[in-house]
Structures are given as structure tokens and as C-alpha cells.
Image (cartoon, rainbow, N blue to C red; front, side):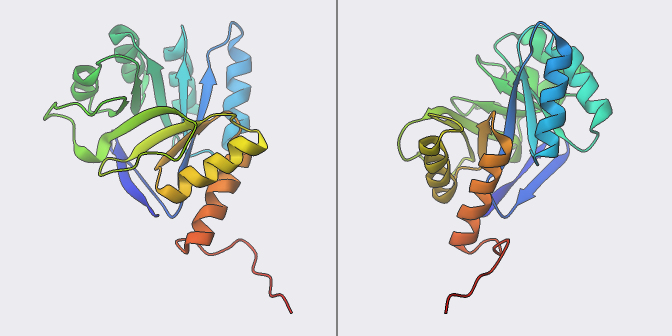
Length: 201
């Protein structure tokens, strides 16, 4: 269940567990979104994506503040996607067909269907299956998913199921809990050593 190598605009992501993407809404007060990113980074997120008007300013801030962080833009608007890529976004989480924009900037691309654009390298394309309520569909293309009940006990159980089934990226607003679940699932599967080994007598 090792996460496949993913490359978003030259940034390689490789892990022995499912990756965690912090979903951040662009709120009327930008400082709240910046605080959310700082908290997500402290909790161990692998990626962050911004959704909402004004995302490009936050992309630029995140790129400057956390140079090693993979930063994405969650949008259906080609002009917003392009502006975010110009500001430093590595990934487009597409709510419409934005494959041309991703290809133009060499950005990673996550969408509900896999595009046929030859300019998009396979290592940068992810299938976004949306919100999961049952066992996830996992095939040849890396999968990005959010689980129903994100952050609740039931949601965390479903996140563990998704990670065990091979989902590559878990989108969440509860980074620390979901990362712990991803690590636990990987340890059970044997792709990652446990954080603490306890021998029962």
C-alpha cells in the first residue's frame, strides 16, 4: 500500500502511507486561512489546497512561507487556475476540465476523470473520486478522496479503510487525526514500521 510516486510541477511525493491534503477555504479574513495552513503544516500535512476567491494570494504566501510544501488550487475557473499556477501552485484540483491549464504550466492535475492530454505526465495525474461513503474504487491511477464524516470516529474508520485499500491522497480538514490513521493503516499493512512496538506477554 505504498503511495505511488507523484510528481507535481517537479515536486516528487513518495511515502510509505497515504498522503494527507489539507483542504483550506479562502475565508473573508485571509489571516484565518493562513492560520489554518500553519496548523496543518504543524500537524504534518503533505499538501495543502485553497478553494475560493482570492486563492492566488494565499498560494503565493504559502509558497514563500513553506517552500517545501506542495500547494494546490481547488477551482473550476481557468483564469483562477492559471493565476494560482503563476503564483506558484504545484497542483490543480479541477472542478471542470482544466487539463489545458495544467499542461501549460506543468502542474499536477486532480480531477473526476482522467484527461487524455498527452502533455500531462502520468505521474502528475490523480483521479479525484470526491467524498467516499463506502470502500473506495482503486485502479491503475492514483486516487484522491475525502471521506464522509471527516474527522468523526466513523469518518476516521472510513479513512483507515480507504488508506488500506490504496487511496493515494486523503483530503481532510483534520490533518493530525487523518495522518495518524494513514500511518496506522500502513503499519498494519507492513509498509511502514509502527511508531511504537508493544509486546504483549
